[in-house]
Length: 102
Image (cartoon, rainbow, N blue to C red; front, side):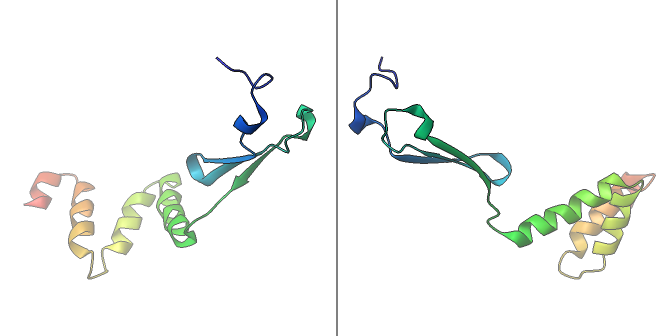
């Protein structure tokens, strides 16, 4: 097995990048110098779609408050496009969800 110290120069990639969780990008730059002090690692945060992030924050915020999730569902229940979905979710907050769903 080859290690980094004995690997031929042409086998060492000059750059590399990997995506991680939560939009984290890890960049590795190899300058080609034998001295390891010239290699660089950078960790960057990448947000691909800001509107998706904002909607996710809207979903997380009510969880932090007491009864916030129910209030969130009640406010979303007024939208005609998703009324069926949110009315079903609202029924699950009822004391007797089975009768509320029927």
